[in-house]
Length: 451
Image 1 (cartoon, rainbow, N blue to C red):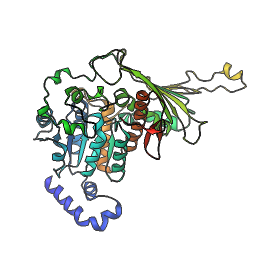
Image 2: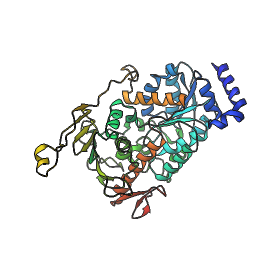
Image 3: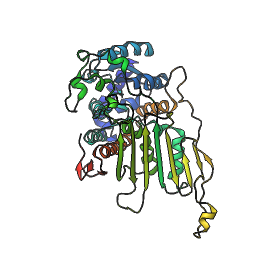
Image 4: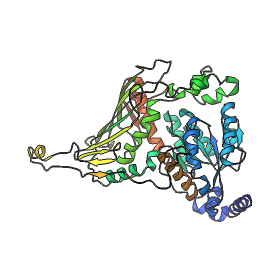
Protein backbone atom coordinates (compact mmCIF):
# COMPACT_ATOMS: atom_id res chain seq x y z
CA UNK A 1 0.00 0.00 0.00
CA UNK A 2 2.78 2.43 0.90
CA UNK A 3 4.67 1.75 -2.33
CA UNK A 4 1.52 2.38 -4.36
CA UNK A 5 0.95 5.59 -2.43
CA UNK A 6 4.52 6.74 -3.08
CA UNK A 7 4.20 5.90 -6.76
CA UNK A 8 0.97 7.86 -7.09
CA UNK A 9 2.42 10.88 -5.31
CA UNK A 10 5.51 10.87 -7.51
CA UNK A 11 3.40 10.52 -10.63
CA UNK A 12 1.16 13.38 -9.58
CA UNK A 13 4.14 15.63 -8.83
CA UNK A 14 5.77 14.83 -12.17
CA UNK A 15 2.69 15.74 -14.18
CA UNK A 16 1.34 18.56 -12.02
CA UNK A 17 2.75 21.41 -14.08
CA UNK A 18 1.61 19.92 -17.39
CA UNK A 19 -1.87 18.61 -16.70
CA UNK A 20 -3.15 18.95 -13.16
CA UNK A 21 -3.09 22.72 -13.07
CA UNK A 22 -5.27 22.95 -16.16
CA UNK A 23 -7.88 20.76 -14.48
CA UNK A 24 -8.04 22.79 -11.27
CA UNK A 25 -6.83 19.98 -8.99
CA UNK A 26 -4.01 20.00 -6.48
CA UNK A 27 -1.39 17.27 -6.73
CA UNK A 28 -2.86 15.56 -3.68
CA UNK A 29 -6.39 15.67 -5.15
CA UNK A 30 -5.18 14.27 -8.47
CA UNK A 31 -3.21 11.53 -6.71
CA UNK A 32 -6.33 10.43 -4.92
CA UNK A 33 -8.33 10.29 -8.16
CA UNK A 34 -5.62 8.21 -9.81
CA UNK A 35 -5.42 5.90 -6.82
CA UNK A 36 -9.05 5.15 -6.10
CA UNK A 37 -7.87 2.35 -3.81
CA UNK A 38 -5.15 4.42 -2.16
CA UNK A 39 -5.59 4.71 1.60
CA UNK A 40 -6.92 8.00 2.96
CA UNK A 41 -5.18 8.86 6.23
CA UNK A 42 -7.35 10.70 8.75
CA UNK A 43 -6.45 12.67 11.87
CA UNK A 44 -8.76 13.33 14.80
CA UNK A 45 -8.93 16.94 16.00
CA UNK A 46 -10.45 16.71 19.47
CA UNK A 47 -11.01 13.36 21.16
CA UNK A 48 -14.38 14.51 22.49
CA UNK A 49 -17.52 12.70 23.61
CA UNK A 50 -19.14 13.52 20.27
CA UNK A 51 -16.26 11.97 18.36
CA UNK A 52 -15.95 8.88 20.54
CA UNK A 53 -19.66 8.11 20.92
CA UNK A 54 -20.98 8.95 17.45
CA UNK A 55 -18.48 9.98 14.79
CA UNK A 56 -15.99 7.21 15.40
CA UNK A 57 -18.55 4.36 15.24
CA UNK A 58 -19.91 5.85 12.03
CA UNK A 59 -16.42 6.13 10.55
CA UNK A 60 -15.62 2.53 11.53
CA UNK A 61 -18.79 1.36 9.82
CA UNK A 62 -17.36 2.39 6.43
CA UNK A 63 -13.59 2.81 6.69
CA UNK A 64 -12.53 -0.69 5.68
CA UNK A 65 -14.76 -0.75 2.61
CA UNK A 66 -13.56 2.69 1.50
CA UNK A 67 -9.96 2.21 2.68
CA UNK A 68 -9.80 5.03 5.21
CA UNK A 69 -7.57 4.87 8.25
CA UNK A 70 -6.95 6.92 11.40
CA UNK A 71 -3.28 7.67 11.99
CA UNK A 72 -3.25 10.45 14.58
CA UNK A 73 -5.23 12.19 17.31
CA UNK A 74 -4.70 15.75 18.53
CA UNK A 75 -6.05 16.89 21.89
CA UNK A 76 -4.61 19.54 24.18
CA UNK A 77 -5.72 17.68 27.32
CA UNK A 78 -3.22 14.96 28.28
CA UNK A 79 -5.90 12.57 29.57
CA UNK A 80 -8.03 12.70 26.43
CA UNK A 81 -5.00 12.54 24.17
CA UNK A 82 -3.66 9.40 25.84
CA UNK A 83 -7.08 7.75 26.09
CA UNK A 84 -7.73 8.55 22.45
CA UNK A 85 -4.46 7.09 21.22
CA UNK A 86 -4.92 3.91 23.26
CA UNK A 87 -8.55 3.35 22.33
CA UNK A 88 -8.11 4.11 18.65
CA UNK A 89 -5.31 1.55 18.52
CA UNK A 90 -7.80 -1.13 19.59
CA UNK A 91 -10.22 -0.01 16.88
CA UNK A 92 -7.93 0.32 13.86
CA UNK A 93 -5.40 -2.36 14.77
CA UNK A 94 -2.21 -0.31 14.85
CA UNK A 95 -0.57 2.51 16.77
CA UNK A 96 -2.24 5.91 16.49
CA UNK A 97 0.10 8.80 17.17
CA UNK A 98 -0.94 11.24 19.92
CA UNK A 99 -0.23 14.93 19.26
CA UNK A 100 -0.21 17.65 21.92
CA UNK A 101 -1.78 20.17 19.52
CA UNK A 102 -2.80 20.70 15.92
CA UNK A 103 0.52 22.24 14.92
CA UNK A 104 2.19 18.92 15.72
CA UNK A 105 -0.56 16.96 13.96
CA UNK A 106 -0.19 18.86 10.70
CA UNK A 107 3.55 18.25 10.56
CA UNK A 108 2.59 14.70 9.54
CA UNK A 109 2.66 15.02 5.78
CA UNK A 110 0.93 11.67 5.31
CA UNK A 111 -2.28 13.22 6.63
CA UNK A 112 -5.05 13.56 4.02
CA UNK A 113 -8.11 14.56 6.06
CA UNK A 114 -9.31 15.39 9.56
CA UNK A 115 -12.45 15.02 11.63
CA UNK A 116 -13.00 18.10 13.81
CA UNK A 117 -15.03 17.61 16.99
CA UNK A 118 -13.74 20.30 19.33
CA UNK A 119 -15.56 23.04 21.28
CA UNK A 120 -18.28 24.93 19.40
CA UNK A 121 -16.36 28.20 19.09
CA UNK A 122 -13.28 26.43 17.70
CA UNK A 123 -14.81 24.66 14.69
CA UNK A 124 -14.40 27.41 12.10
CA UNK A 125 -10.82 28.29 13.04
CA UNK A 126 -9.84 24.64 13.24
CA UNK A 127 -11.24 24.26 9.72
CA UNK A 128 -9.00 27.10 8.56
CA UNK A 129 -6.00 25.32 10.10
CA UNK A 130 -6.88 22.10 8.29
CA UNK A 131 -7.32 23.81 4.93
CA UNK A 132 -3.94 25.53 5.31
CA UNK A 133 -2.48 22.09 6.06
CA UNK A 134 -3.92 20.78 2.76
CA UNK A 135 -6.48 18.48 4.38
CA UNK A 136 -10.10 17.63 3.65
CA UNK A 137 -12.45 18.19 6.59
CA UNK A 138 -15.45 16.72 8.38
CA UNK A 139 -16.41 19.50 10.79
CA UNK A 140 -18.97 19.22 13.55
CA UNK A 141 -21.64 21.88 13.87
CA UNK A 142 -22.18 24.66 14.75
CA UNK A 143 -19.74 25.87 12.14
CA UNK A 144 -19.11 29.23 13.82
CA UNK A 145 -20.34 31.28 16.76
CA UNK A 146 -19.15 34.68 15.49
CA UNK A 147 -19.37 36.16 12.01
CA UNK A 148 -15.66 37.02 11.94
CA UNK A 149 -14.84 33.33 12.39
CA UNK A 150 -17.51 32.27 9.89
CA UNK A 151 -16.26 34.72 7.26
CA UNK A 152 -12.63 33.66 7.71
CA UNK A 153 -13.48 29.99 7.36
CA UNK A 154 -15.78 30.46 4.36
CA UNK A 155 -13.06 32.43 2.57
CA UNK A 156 -10.41 29.81 3.28
CA UNK A 157 -12.55 26.90 2.13
CA UNK A 158 -13.81 28.63 -1.02
CA UNK A 159 -10.25 29.53 -2.02
CA UNK A 160 -9.26 25.87 -1.82
CA UNK A 161 -10.19 22.67 -3.64
CA UNK A 162 -10.77 20.76 -0.44
CA UNK A 163 -13.81 18.74 0.55
CA UNK A 164 -15.53 20.14 3.65
CA UNK A 165 -18.55 18.43 5.12
CA UNK A 166 -20.43 20.22 7.91
CA UNK A 167 -21.98 17.91 10.52
CA UNK A 168 -25.57 18.80 9.58
CA UNK A 169 -26.53 15.17 9.17
CA UNK A 170 -30.17 15.76 8.27
CA UNK A 171 -28.90 16.51 4.76
CA UNK A 172 -27.98 12.84 4.38
CA UNK A 173 -31.33 11.47 5.57
CA UNK A 174 -33.63 9.92 2.99
CA UNK A 175 -36.78 11.36 4.58
CA UNK A 176 -35.28 14.86 4.59
CA UNK A 177 -34.20 14.51 0.97
CA UNK A 178 -37.72 13.44 0.06
CA UNK A 179 -39.17 16.41 1.96
CA UNK A 180 -36.80 18.78 0.18
CA UNK A 181 -37.77 17.38 -3.21
CA UNK A 182 -41.49 17.67 -2.44
CA UNK A 183 -41.26 21.31 -1.33
CA UNK A 184 -38.87 22.36 -4.08
CA UNK A 185 -41.08 20.73 -6.75
CA UNK A 186 -43.83 23.22 -5.92
CA UNK A 187 -46.28 20.49 -4.91
CA UNK A 188 -46.34 21.69 -1.30
CA UNK A 189 -47.15 25.26 -2.26
CA UNK A 190 -45.47 28.30 -0.74
CA UNK A 191 -44.25 27.74 2.81
CA UNK A 192 -46.31 29.93 5.12
CA UNK A 193 -44.98 28.90 8.55
CA UNK A 194 -42.41 26.59 10.15
CA UNK A 195 -42.50 25.45 13.78
CA UNK A 196 -39.30 24.03 15.27
CA UNK A 197 -39.02 22.69 18.82
CA UNK A 198 -36.42 20.73 20.78
CA UNK A 199 -37.21 19.97 24.43
CA UNK A 200 -35.53 17.82 27.09
CA UNK A 201 -35.68 17.35 30.86
CA UNK A 202 -32.04 16.67 31.60
CA UNK A 203 -30.27 18.53 34.43
CA UNK A 204 -27.04 16.79 33.41
CA UNK A 205 -27.18 17.75 29.73
CA UNK A 206 -23.81 19.28 28.81
CA UNK A 207 -22.53 18.86 32.38
CA UNK A 208 -19.35 16.83 33.03
CA UNK A 209 -19.19 16.45 36.85
CA UNK A 210 -17.16 13.25 36.71
CA UNK A 211 -14.41 14.84 34.62
CA UNK A 212 -14.09 18.12 36.51
CA UNK A 213 -12.13 16.37 39.28
CA UNK A 214 -9.74 14.84 36.76
CA UNK A 215 -8.64 17.85 34.76
CA UNK A 216 -5.81 20.12 35.88
CA UNK A 217 -4.58 23.27 34.20
CA UNK A 218 -1.01 21.93 33.91
CA UNK A 219 -2.31 18.94 31.93
CA UNK A 220 -3.80 21.04 29.15
CA UNK A 221 -3.15 24.25 27.22
CA UNK A 222 -5.67 26.83 28.41
CA UNK A 223 -4.24 29.64 26.27
CA UNK A 224 -4.49 27.56 23.11
CA UNK A 225 -8.00 26.49 24.11
CA UNK A 226 -9.19 30.13 24.29
CA UNK A 227 -7.97 30.82 20.73
CA UNK A 228 -9.34 34.26 19.83
CA UNK A 229 -11.74 34.60 22.77
CA UNK A 230 -11.09 37.16 25.53
CA UNK A 231 -8.77 35.94 28.25
CA UNK A 232 -10.38 34.44 31.34
CA UNK A 233 -8.68 32.70 34.24
CA UNK A 234 -8.52 28.91 34.12
CA UNK A 235 -11.94 27.38 34.65
CA UNK A 236 -12.43 23.64 34.13
CA UNK A 237 -16.17 24.13 33.64
CA UNK A 238 -15.63 26.43 30.68
CA UNK A 239 -13.27 23.82 29.24
CA UNK A 240 -15.40 20.71 29.79
CA UNK A 241 -18.90 22.24 29.92
CA UNK A 242 -18.35 24.87 27.23
CA UNK A 243 -21.88 24.47 25.83
CA UNK A 244 -23.18 26.22 28.94
CA UNK A 245 -20.92 29.26 28.64
CA UNK A 246 -20.94 32.11 26.14
CA UNK A 247 -18.70 33.05 24.29
CA UNK A 248 -17.51 29.43 23.96
CA UNK A 249 -20.95 28.33 22.78
CA UNK A 250 -24.37 29.85 22.23
CA UNK A 251 -25.94 26.73 23.76
CA UNK A 252 -29.44 26.03 22.49
CA UNK A 253 -29.12 27.88 19.14
CA UNK A 254 -25.73 26.46 18.22
CA UNK A 255 -26.30 22.94 19.47
CA UNK A 256 -29.88 22.26 18.44
CA UNK A 257 -31.36 25.06 16.38
CA UNK A 258 -28.46 24.89 13.92
CA UNK A 259 -29.69 21.44 12.82
CA UNK A 260 -33.30 22.47 12.37
CA UNK A 261 -32.78 25.89 10.82
CA UNK A 262 -30.52 24.24 8.26
CA UNK A 263 -33.52 22.35 6.88
CA UNK A 264 -35.33 25.69 6.44
CA UNK A 265 -32.47 26.99 4.32
CA UNK A 266 -32.22 23.74 2.38
CA UNK A 267 -35.93 23.32 1.67
CA UNK A 268 -36.65 26.99 0.87
CA UNK A 269 -33.46 27.91 -0.97
CA UNK A 270 -33.07 30.98 1.27
CA UNK A 271 -29.66 31.53 2.82
CA UNK A 272 -30.54 33.38 6.00
CA UNK A 273 -33.37 35.09 7.89
CA UNK A 274 -34.29 38.68 7.13
CA UNK A 275 -34.66 39.36 10.85
CA UNK A 276 -34.84 37.64 14.24
CA UNK A 277 -36.36 38.57 17.60
CA UNK A 278 -35.82 36.31 20.58
CA UNK A 279 -36.13 35.95 24.32
CA UNK A 280 -34.62 33.51 26.79
CA UNK A 281 -33.53 32.93 30.33
CA UNK A 282 -32.18 30.55 32.95
CA UNK A 283 -35.41 29.56 34.65
CA UNK A 284 -34.64 26.15 36.13
CA UNK A 285 -31.00 25.02 36.17
CA UNK A 286 -29.28 27.74 38.19
CA UNK A 287 -25.90 26.00 38.28
CA UNK A 288 -23.65 28.88 37.26
CA UNK A 289 -24.23 28.55 33.53
CA UNK A 290 -24.32 31.60 31.25
CA UNK A 291 -26.44 30.13 28.47
CA UNK A 292 -30.20 29.84 28.77
CA UNK A 293 -32.18 26.75 29.66
CA UNK A 294 -35.25 28.15 27.87
CA UNK A 295 -35.63 30.28 24.76
CA UNK A 296 -37.92 31.21 21.88
CA UNK A 297 -36.89 32.86 18.62
CA UNK A 298 -39.09 34.20 15.82
CA UNK A 299 -37.63 34.58 12.33
CA UNK A 300 -38.80 36.40 9.24
CA UNK A 301 -37.70 34.64 6.05
CA UNK A 302 -38.11 35.73 2.47
CA UNK A 303 -36.33 37.42 -0.45
CA UNK A 304 -34.36 40.46 0.67
CA UNK A 305 -35.71 42.46 -2.28
CA UNK A 306 -39.40 41.57 -1.87
CA UNK A 307 -41.06 42.15 1.51
CA UNK A 308 -44.41 40.91 0.13
CA UNK A 309 -43.09 37.34 -0.01
CA UNK A 310 -41.96 35.21 2.86
CA UNK A 311 -42.91 33.20 5.91
CA UNK A 312 -42.33 33.00 9.64
CA UNK A 313 -40.25 30.43 11.53
CA UNK A 314 -40.38 29.85 15.26
CA UNK A 315 -37.82 27.93 17.31
CA UNK A 316 -38.55 27.05 20.93
CA UNK A 317 -36.42 24.99 23.28
CA UNK A 318 -36.44 24.12 26.96
CA UNK A 319 -34.17 21.91 29.04
CA UNK A 320 -36.48 21.28 32.02
CA UNK A 321 -39.46 19.49 30.47
CA UNK A 322 -39.53 17.26 27.42
CA UNK A 323 -38.72 13.87 25.95
CA UNK A 324 -36.26 14.88 23.20
CA UNK A 325 -38.45 14.38 20.17
CA UNK A 326 -37.33 17.33 18.02
CA UNK A 327 -40.23 18.62 15.97
CA UNK A 328 -40.08 20.15 12.49
CA UNK A 329 -43.45 21.14 11.07
CA UNK A 330 -43.81 22.91 7.72
CA UNK A 331 -47.14 24.52 6.86
CA UNK A 332 -48.72 25.69 3.62
CA UNK A 333 -52.24 26.72 2.75
CA UNK A 334 -52.88 23.15 1.65
CA UNK A 335 -51.70 21.26 4.76
CA UNK A 336 -48.54 20.28 6.58
CA UNK A 337 -45.27 18.43 6.18
CA UNK A 338 -44.44 16.74 9.47
CA UNK A 339 -40.91 15.46 10.05
CA UNK A 340 -41.87 13.74 13.29
CA UNK A 341 -44.32 11.42 11.58
CA UNK A 342 -42.55 11.71 8.18
CA UNK A 343 -45.84 12.45 6.47
CA UNK A 344 -47.38 15.07 4.21
CA UNK A 345 -51.07 15.54 4.95
CA UNK A 346 -54.01 17.93 4.31
CA UNK A 347 -54.13 18.73 8.03
CA UNK A 348 -55.11 22.39 8.41
CA UNK A 349 -55.52 22.87 4.66
CA UNK A 350 -58.19 25.05 3.05
CA UNK A 351 -61.36 22.96 3.00
CA UNK A 352 -64.52 23.24 0.92
CA UNK A 353 -66.70 25.17 3.36
CA UNK A 354 -64.14 27.83 4.17
CA UNK A 355 -63.08 28.14 0.54
CA UNK A 356 -66.63 28.46 -0.80
CA UNK A 357 -67.41 31.35 1.55
CA UNK A 358 -64.83 33.40 -0.34
CA UNK A 359 -65.60 31.95 -3.79
CA UNK A 360 -62.36 30.00 -3.70
CA UNK A 361 -61.47 26.42 -4.51
CA UNK A 362 -60.42 24.09 -1.68
CA UNK A 363 -56.69 23.47 -1.38
CA UNK A 364 -55.73 20.16 0.21
CA UNK A 365 -52.45 18.30 0.03
CA UNK A 366 -52.47 14.54 -0.57
CA UNK A 367 -51.62 12.01 2.12
CA UNK A 368 -48.03 10.99 1.48
CA UNK A 369 -45.24 9.22 3.34
CA UNK A 370 -41.73 10.68 3.52
CA UNK A 371 -40.29 7.55 5.09
CA UNK A 372 -37.63 5.71 3.13
CA UNK A 373 -35.67 2.56 3.78
CA UNK A 374 -32.07 3.51 4.49
CA UNK A 375 -29.59 1.06 2.98
CA UNK A 376 -25.95 0.28 3.81
CA UNK A 377 -25.51 3.26 6.10
CA UNK A 378 -27.16 2.15 9.34
CA UNK A 379 -24.65 1.92 12.17
CA UNK A 380 -25.18 -1.39 13.87
CA UNK A 381 -26.18 -1.81 17.49
CA UNK A 382 -22.73 -3.18 18.15
CA UNK A 383 -20.85 -0.16 16.82
CA UNK A 384 -23.07 2.66 18.08
CA UNK A 385 -23.66 5.84 16.11
CA UNK A 386 -26.94 6.57 14.35
CA UNK A 387 -28.34 6.21 10.87
CA UNK A 388 -28.21 9.88 9.88
CA UNK A 389 -24.67 10.41 11.16
CA UNK A 390 -23.53 7.18 9.51
CA UNK A 391 -24.99 8.23 6.18
CA UNK A 392 -23.42 11.65 6.55
CA UNK A 393 -19.99 10.26 7.34
CA UNK A 394 -20.29 7.89 4.40
CA UNK A 395 -21.16 10.79 2.11
CA UNK A 396 -18.08 12.71 3.22
CA UNK A 397 -15.82 9.71 2.68
CA UNK A 398 -17.30 9.09 -0.76
CA UNK A 399 -16.74 12.75 -1.67
CA UNK A 400 -13.13 12.69 -0.48
CA UNK A 401 -12.71 9.94 -3.08
CA UNK A 402 -14.78 11.48 -5.89
CA UNK A 403 -13.99 15.18 -5.21
CA UNK A 404 -17.69 15.95 -5.58
CA UNK A 405 -19.37 18.41 -3.23
CA UNK A 406 -20.80 16.71 -0.10
CA UNK A 407 -24.39 16.93 1.10
CA UNK A 408 -23.59 19.69 3.62
CA UNK A 409 -20.91 21.89 2.04
CA UNK A 410 -19.33 24.86 3.76
CA UNK A 411 -22.15 27.18 2.65
CA UNK A 412 -24.62 25.14 4.71
CA UNK A 413 -22.49 25.70 7.80
CA UNK A 414 -22.05 29.38 7.05
CA UNK A 415 -25.77 29.90 6.60
CA UNK A 416 -26.83 28.11 9.77
CA UNK A 417 -24.17 30.13 11.60
CA UNK A 418 -25.73 33.37 10.37
CA UNK A 419 -29.08 32.27 11.82
CA UNK A 420 -27.65 31.12 15.16
CA UNK A 421 -25.55 34.27 15.57
CA UNK A 422 -28.58 36.42 14.74
CA UNK A 423 -30.52 34.54 17.43
CA UNK A 424 -27.74 35.01 19.95
CA UNK A 425 -27.57 38.71 19.12
CA UNK A 426 -31.34 39.11 19.50
CA UNK A 427 -31.52 37.36 22.87
CA UNK A 428 -28.51 39.11 24.33
CA UNK A 429 -29.45 42.59 23.10
CA UNK A 430 -33.22 42.31 23.53
CA UNK A 431 -33.54 43.85 20.05
CA UNK A 432 -34.20 42.78 16.48
CA UNK A 433 -31.17 41.36 14.69
CA UNK A 434 -30.62 41.53 10.93
CA UNK A 435 -27.90 40.40 8.55
CA UNK A 436 -25.92 42.49 6.08
CA UNK A 437 -24.74 40.08 3.40
CA UNK A 438 -22.42 42.69 1.86
CA UNK A 439 -20.35 43.14 5.03
CA UNK A 440 -20.99 39.60 6.28
CA UNK A 441 -22.07 40.91 9.68
CA UNK A 442 -25.04 40.41 11.98
CA UNK A 443 -26.41 43.82 12.94
CA UNK A 444 -28.20 45.19 15.98
CA UNK A 445 -29.21 48.86 15.75
CA UNK A 446 -27.20 48.98 12.54
CA UNK A 447 -23.96 47.96 14.25
CA UNK A 448 -22.12 44.61 14.09
CA UNK A 449 -22.92 42.31 17.01
CA UNK A 450 -19.85 41.55 19.12
CA UNK A 451 -19.26 39.52 22.22
